[in-house]
Amino acid sequence: MRNSRVGEVIVAQLIRVAGYSAIVFVALILFFLIREGGPALLEVPVRNLLGVRWYPIEGYFGLLPLLGGTLVVTLGATAIAAPLGVLTAVYIAEVAPRWAREVLKPVIELLAGIPSVALGFVGILVFVPFVRTTFGLPTGLSAFTGAILLGLIAIPTIVSVAEDAIDAVPRTYRDAALALGATDWQAIWRVTVPAARTGIMTAVMLGVGRAIGETMAVMMVTGNAPVMPSGLLALFHPVRTMTATIAAEMGEVANGSTHYHTLFLIGMVLFLITLAVNLVAAGIVFRQRKRAERILS
Amino acid sequence: MSASQRTAARRLVIQRLGYAGLALAALLTVAPIAVIVGIMVWHGAPAISVEFLTAMPRDGLRAGGIFPAIVGTFWLTIGTAIVAVPLGVGAAIYLAEYAADSRWTRAIRVAIINLAGIPSVVYGLFGLGLFVLFLQLGTSIIAGSLTLAIMTLPVIISTAEEALRAVPSSFRVVSISLGGTRWQTVWRIVLPQALPGILTGVILGLERAAGETAPILFTAAALFLPRLPSSIFDPTMALPYHLFVIATQIPGMPVQIQYGTALVLLSFVLGMNLIATLIRSRARARRQW
Image (cartoon, rainbow over all chains, first blue to last red; front, side, top):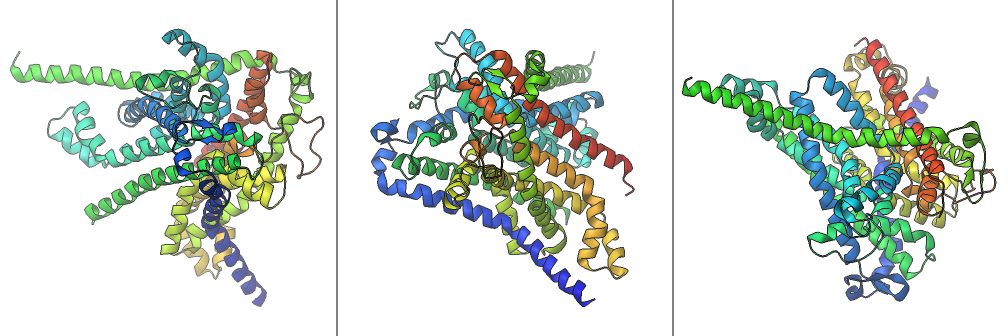
């Protein structure tokens, strides 16, 4: 009897440790990024870091072309994935007949399961030549090709979160609209979707977060050129994202060198960006839940 | 035809067009997926043979099989499971069964959201900094598994917690009223009921880990090894990294081997997905509450 009580306390403590491990890991990740990336701030003058040339062999550590590359590719991906994802979610939640839903949902889940390196591989062999011949470019390895692949990667997240949000709109809202003489179409766009808009925004934010952090597929099809993108046409030039830079160069740098520290610094920047995106997304959900509670009480 | 009838007819036309537009959007979303999977199966299937799956690579990876990459991914996935499953399920039990809704539990939730959003390549950096260099594990299966495990945690925690919360509270009330302690209640009553849901989450998390490249780039992966790893402190080849290497780094690489490797990786990952789906649907059919 006494034994089992002691066991009970030990198990409870172990479980508590597991529970708090998430916090420990986030702290550890931040600690090691700062520990390895912080020195870059001392070794490289800020003016250099904010420059437009990334050419580490000659001591140029300008982060702007990499930030620009990530920005162009992510914006392109969002422009593709947000409308397609949200419209697909509306279709699945509100319009699709049962059989179409049973086909669409698993296929989109399938997309979520395809490893990004496999998407990148198909990207090289299929999308790259396609983009080159369609737009008459010297090379199909471009930000646009990366944006297509990233769009595909962001779509499953956007569809599933947005669909949940639309599903969560109370049936009575729709019924009220229909009773007032609205068509189904009007009820969807003037009642259901506006009521779900915070959830839909969260969905897009989470999709954007995934796109920013994606590495392999982007690295394989964007041409790996750390050039400062300028203007709209930059979409059709080769670029290099922050994630791709880390993945491509970390294998070749000496541990403890300035280049090594700067790559960790890029990791720190990525960490902070995705943290901000995800906290904003989570904040939207939290606020929405609060409001729903207020309305219901 | 009266004015109101005309309005109604016009609205109906708009609705029909709108629905067609939505269906088109959905089609545009799924068509590329079907094309991508179709291409991989079509070109990859002819490459698959017993030799391809069980032989070592030859001629600078340009011939032979991909056996060491398959074995490596298998061990990395097992290693990830050994670390991530107890930790993740434990955390889920804490959140669902033990923790009160306090400031600290909210901090844990924020941490989990945060972990879920960290880019995979940043996990790779972290693994390099902590496991490979600081703890001096070197580029090894264990360093890669630990890195992948931390990346997989948020998926496992959130799906397992959801599965635990789905068990009706009457189960707990009955167990406690019969004199069961909290742990006995969790271990003998709640966990068995939530097991299918937890398993689904675990497999989905491991599926992601098995397909990831960026976290193992600097923590576990080797371009080519003449023999299989003999301990968890050895580096290893792995399917996703192997595909990356032969797709981008080797000039004159036969396309068939590339497609074959992609298909094996895809089957590995989607096979796990299929198992998870089967567990979920079987459990749903059998559930009594």
